[in-house]
Image (cartoon, rainbow, N blue to C red; front, top):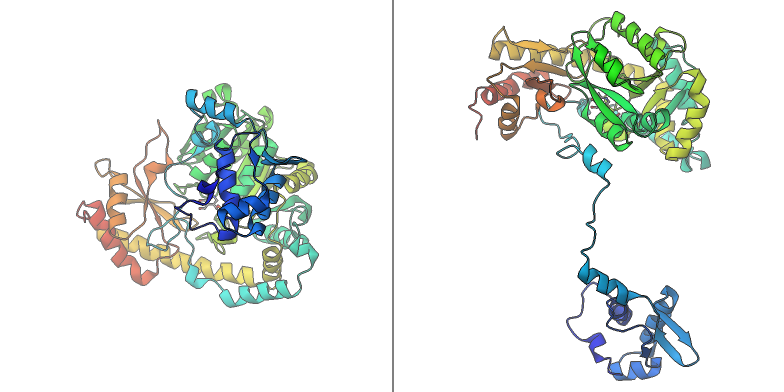
Length: 483
Ligand SMILES: Cc1ncc(COP(=O)(O)O)c(C=O)c1O
């Protein structure tokens, strides 16, 4: 048999010479050019005719035999019956199904990449990376590595590192007034993983989840990917404002809220609204997911009481994160669960995620036990308060005293409301060309809710740079920012 074409040029660069024959034979078999049943020459003969080492041929044959492309019997080596002919014919008549994501994933996808955390002025959700206590953190990490054993290198313990769960339970008791035990805390890879777990462990396929409108888009993605039906519920000055029709026509299984500092408007849910929500959720068998993502940075006084601790056995799951207090790439957050489901949820979460990050978890437990976390929070609270004050002053000075700003009670961002004739998406596009990263408020809303404004992060905006950044923002707002 004439097999010279097997090594004919052009020869692919990426394939080592040693493997070229194997590669070409395999290609020919899979493409049907060497039909099933075709007898191949003996290895010595093929090596001679191609003028290559016999070992190269032996390697190719052995590899293809082990993959099932060739069969060997007493008469020699032949191409295995791989039913490729049928496949080739079918491909000619029926176009192959497109390679694509599931309908669920395609529907849940949001336009644009995952948040750009580049430290541009006004990027929402960016903490002050420059103020991160690198030295203290590195010391904790080094200690964690020095002492690392199988527990830290294997999958994480159920619920997470026991010392971290303990540290968080006492932190939340002291700082947030939540009387919780370590068994009620489950460490997660940030809020996103926590929401995913809630969707999968507390709701069934097709159940309804209420999300705030405007609201946190990443939560929509998590719930959409988990196969839940998303129902947008409007937000007013007191937080989530479900109507009678919402309760009657779209009874929820999950209700996702950011009550301490509604994301993105910054409104705080009233106590009356909190109690009513718990009562209604209890009656219809719904779980409230309380995302307390930035209450560590309250401007004045303690944070409003969490729904989680308001009533015994309330159907509330509390979610917290280290993304704002430390840094988002750490990917550590936590869930706090009612006692009634804590054990089952912890076990299910361990089975669902097979979590890890044992070293980071140990380092964080150490960081908290040494008081470094509380000290860092204290420092950052006053730093962010000063940054917010500088931003407010610069905005008023540059844009006029009558501008409407909301959301300063906590966190790392303000909302600047814009008049209807100034479109927030256009301002954001012009601002981007000027090296700024405010986010248009309308991007967080779904019809019929419409809002027009800018979400202005100030976590990474030093006081000294506020005025200059606001002057550039003013250019974008007034339409002179077209570059
Ligand atoms: C409303 C809200 N929740 C939670 C988070 C933190 O998410 P993660 O812990 O997944 O980083 C953010 C971050 O921007 C947020 O805006």
